[in-house]
Length: 284
Ligand SMILES: Cc1cc2nc3c(=O)[nH]c(=O)nc-3n(C[C@H](O)[C@H](O)[C@H](O)COP(=O)(O)OP(=O)(O)OC[C@H]3O[C@@H](n4cnc5c(N)ncnc54)[C@H](O)[C@@H]3O)c2cc1C
Image 1 (cartoon, protein in one colour):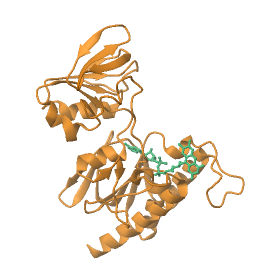
Image 2 (image 1 turned 30 degrees about the vertical axis):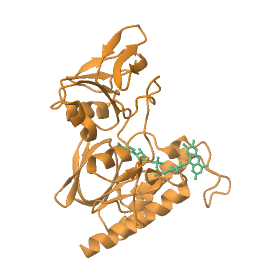
Image 3 (image 1 turned 90 degrees about the vertical axis):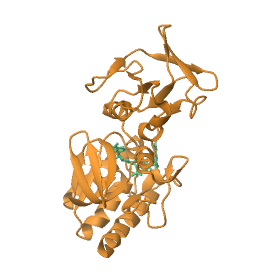
């Protein structure tokens, strides 16, 4: 049982962890997959680095700093977050963890497949959240686009609702095992009329479908948020000035809250979240 479980080891998550740990809280930070920071070749506008620093070096330094302060930092992909009574149960690819509070510091990632028709049918048969929208596809035939554990976990959420599920890897290798039907063909186009009806593959074959669930890479902050009933706007998590969401004990910071997408803002919001959690737990 942790006082706080932070999803994300970028500047927002690490900063939240540091402030919480310095107040003696029991902190776990989980991270998996590429962060925005790692993609930055050179950061020249962040305080204190006279010659700039590569995003990758800054990212790794943050993780090492947290570890040196005694924070548990684990490289595990988070698949699901559930609020059970007062606490948060976090399911990763390897374990389940429980925390009194939770911080979503997962960056701003909504991975869209680069397929013709994806924008046209967004919300018209294309969904990014199985728990949120699965109900609309009762006894229908759906596909999940993705090739990792997150895709399989989305399929699991759909299996008792829909008629059939096929995982479409869009030409990639499936990175995990599954009992669901898998189709590895490369997708050419998503077709339909007022809503999605068909997927055309590059080899000229077609698949008639009623719905598509996109689950590329890892689940992002807004995916977790939607499942938990957290308010979002344009996929940004809505927080108050203490970085608290509309759910008690759940906080968010950094790119996942939108606004200025910069390291300085992520570090600041992480600090606010860490301190807010300290006083939240003290008052509890
Ligand atoms: C090319 C590029 C150049 C940039 N240049 C600059 C610059 O010059 N100056 C500047 O200030 N900013 C720059 N930025 C922006 C900056 O990188 C971001 O604002 C900052 O990294 C946001 O921090 P964050 O902690 O919110 O998210 P991120 O750094 O994106 O970290 C997100 C974390 O969440 C983890 N995560 C996500 N999903 C899961 C999951 N399901 N399970 C477990 N872990 C998960 C990731 O592994 C990662 O640790 C640049 C960004 C890019 C892409």
